[in-house]
Image (cartoon, rainbow, N blue to C red):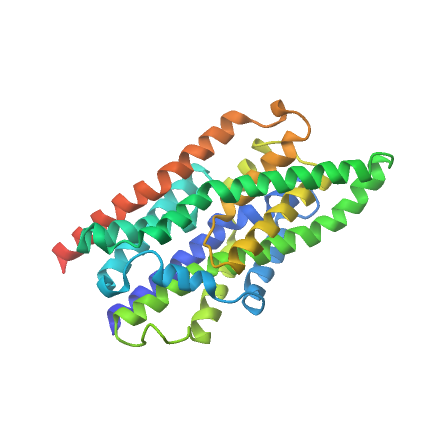
Length: 328
């Protein structure tokens, strides 16, 4: 029982780290365009991270709980190894200022620990393939939608004064940033819910048919919101200015496209990366100016971190599982 409590605490720590690691995704554009101060921006993001539980069904939690590895082979050691791997990779990429994906880190950790425990037959390949596919689909969708929204906005405001446009979109960006934070909380907090749920199944406390208890929902949303309050300022600079310079209307377009992508993914129960989504959206906005407006060197660095996330976290997860088995 004590081990289960320690594991649940570890999951909530991961959720907290997810909040401060990914807080930059929600607030980078609204801070970089100077619409809000960093403190006001994180307060806004944290609030909507928490409120997301009122909006979205728990389909992403079900995917993480049942759709990545076979629940029959899950033990508390497997889950512990996966969560520790996710925490380690998140902290490493945060320290390096790289906007990697907490979602794919967790998936990689689960796969690596499960394979170490029971072999390659323990992986639900259809579920992992769907998640891996959206490594590409989510940023591309965000990029295409932000490009279309940006072109439409530019057409609408082409005869307006720059000062008037800037003034209106500063207000609208508050709406788009709130919507993106809502999507972030709705998709990302559910990943931790799925892990806690499958841990309770492994411990024999609930069955696979049991609904996810409200205490799990509230604690996961609370942890990610609290993490967001502490913020990831290393990544804010990369996301908000290094990819491309943003104006308020461009920040609005990027956040709106990102929010729509997250809402769609959460509705269909697909765990996606908020990092990938907003990065693609920012690139789409930058591309409306000219291709050279996007800092492709920075973008390539980010893309490499994406590609490495699942395999590296899987190796870390497997190594930690073997270490746990040896020690205990």
